[in-house]
Amino acid sequence: MTSPTISLERVHLVGIGGAGMSGLARILLDRGLTVTGSDMADSAVVASLREAGASIAVGHAAENLNLSGQAPTVVVTSFAAIPKDNPELVAAREQQIEVIRRSDLLALLMEGFQQVLIAGTHGKTSTTSMSVVAMREAGLDPSYAIGGQLNRDGLGAHHGSGSAFVAEADESDASLLRYRPEVAVVTNVEPDHLDYFGSAEAYFQVFEDFAARIVPGGHLVVCVDDEHAVSVARRAQDRGVTVRGYGSAEAALQHPEITMLGTVEKMEATAAGSRAQIDLDGVTVQVDLNIPGRHMMLNATAALCAGYLAGGEPEALAAGVSTFDGVRRRFEHKGTAAGVEVFDDYAHHPTEVEAVLKAARSKQEAAGQGGRVVAVFQPHLYSRTKEFAAEFAHALSLADEVVLLEVFGAREKPIEGVDSGLIAAHMPENMAGAVVREPDFEAAAHRAVEVARPGDLVLTMGAGSVTRLGPQIVAELES
Image: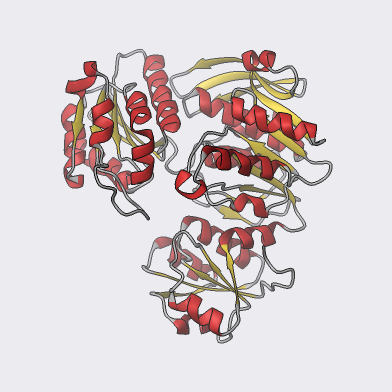
């Protein structure tokens, strides 16, 4: 835990160009504090932070701690991305400067605000982003920190004038236990990050512990369509926490023990996305989403609930969430060429892959032109590929054509015998001719273009470098 005496007067961020770190740097700058940092490469993000007043070095060195002319009062790092022998961290410890995690900094920035935190295995970034847009359009002007960038303004963080602070609560390393939410949303709970937790039971427990950190008088909001989230809700209720539910009308009937706050009464697919009638605490509102998928409408309902408990009016929140035009890498439209639409998504867990492919399918069916779905998938992490190979194959079987890239190892070293062939081996026999393994990353875009036909939808998916392929596919289709 962080020391209560930590001063944010001069903050040095190691890896300042990262998505999460750069957002917190922007909030610090908006508050008039001194910000320095370093990153391995220059980027548009680094340039924009310099323009906002930060002093940033390219490359890591001990002398970077003095970029402002004075030693920092605190150094911030991401333990998952920055090695402990980083020269700036070593120098900070030698000079007895406090070193904290990014999640610790976020906890400090949220002090004094009404904390609205979005947790869950899937959907955190989309739900947080929708909450921000809904609340902003409803006149609440929240501060926020999300794990992506809003398509509308390209920002992932903001220091607002309102009383609420909306943020993702990341469970991957249990950092969500550093926060004290007044409103805590749990979208779903499904085993993941077992390389960190070791077991599904340990993973489930972190959500139990998160619910226990809700401040007195606060609310736990859970999706009643997810049984594990309902289990967290039941135990929280037993401890005296106020629990409200959101989700489909069918699931609400199955869980009368949960008092509903947001109920999706009617939903239909549209050519642009989906439309639904939602009961928000007794007020019926209509939401028109420009992003397809049942899971996205559930996320939108969670956003309405969060905004409502933060003080927003139902009609204004619904109008706001209907203006949501997406977040980077969440069913993000990359372009249309030769009659083929190309989208990119961060989906890297079987449940996410299945949900996104179902959304793509519903979009194609609503268009009524018989277009197919072509999936270009890059598995993320050797451990996750080994654990869920069969589940990935089942999810990918929802596509008409599949191009399988090799595993993006990220922080992991290769595991003998683990590659994308594990997933291919589990694909249904009737898809044998529709699955292509492409070990050459640069050739993957060409393979996708080869199989795509006018009217098709191509979807690149994964948490790694696969996001670079979308523009390449569009360019090849144009040529």
